[in-house]
Amino acid sequence: MATTIATISLASSDLTSSALAFSSTNPLNTAGTATGLSLTSGLSRTTTEYGSSSIIESTTLYRSDDAATNGANKVYLKNLSTTPAEYYTVFIDQEEMGRLYAGDWAFFPWSATAGTKETFIMTVGGTWVAGETLEFDGVLTTAANTTVADIAAQVDAQHFPNWTTTISGAAVTFTARHSMDAGTVVTATADMVIVQAGGSDATAVVSSAAMGAATSSDIMIIPSVHTSMTFEHMLFHQ
Amino acid sequence: MATTTASLTLTSTDLFDDSLSISNTSTLHKAGTTIGLDQTTGLTKTYVTATQQFDPFPVVKGATNADENGRVYIANLSEEITEYIIVSIGDLVVGRLYAGDFLWMPWSPKLQHVNDIEITPSVATGMWIEFMAIHNFANIYPNSADS
Image (cartoon, rainbow over all chains, first blue to last red):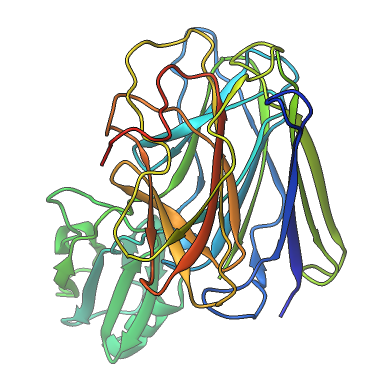
């Protein structure tokens, strides 16, 4: 358990006829407990810059998959620009929260509403010949022998850029690393590219494919200008 | 023109192997200027006894100021660690503020009801909540009817 203390102070001598001066201090704890948040993204800096004729894209700072849904997660943001007119617009999913102008900071809770990750089962079958290959997600697996369970184990041992895997016999269950709504298209047997030796009938059949659903609270920012701007951010989460 | 400053410190000696010490102070300006924000709802402290969602900063927004900008402070003053408030913008949940938690965030209100900030207490047994907006929007009425 870590102890992290957040303190906010607001002060003004002339916003109202009486001076404004108050502060609040609180430890960052996990939801409903007195146990400190112990996970963090670390303090990060992100620079945005676009060609003068290009479209300014949004940058996703944190995906909802990065933190526990309805946890006592906290997000810290700061616009490091020193030009008063430059700002970042902060969005949660499609909802605009507001603008952070030069030097502005924000500190707010984040429910990190999770989506659903696409899954499917790929079952190694048929008759394989050692040296035949199976390619998926840019990863090539070369059969070391003719045993389908061994080949499935080889696939399971790979590191796929967009998927994680578990195995049961000759069946490998793939789970997407990120929640995403891929429309009506799910991974199919045709996405498994097998290069067979002559006379082989090696198969890798996809079944039980289930579409994912997009998260609904990713945190995104959009800069106001094409020129270079830098943003500082940190996620405390459970 | 008013001068209002907002400061945040985040410190920890054991979150990392090395200490964490973040300290920021910003002055609240109208958009794109160095002119201070000059309106506020005032610091409101309220005792809520229902789990019904309510709107701390009702928006009846028509005119748009060219340099409009706003900041919002909300704090859950409860001392019961399981009690929280849900803070939303429009239909989207931002997050939960548990006992003692606070937030400070930018706010760009649109038309009435479009992206109002809403608060939903987790219990009906009574919770103290504090909130304040500092801004230069036209037509933010702390006591107006809204939903």
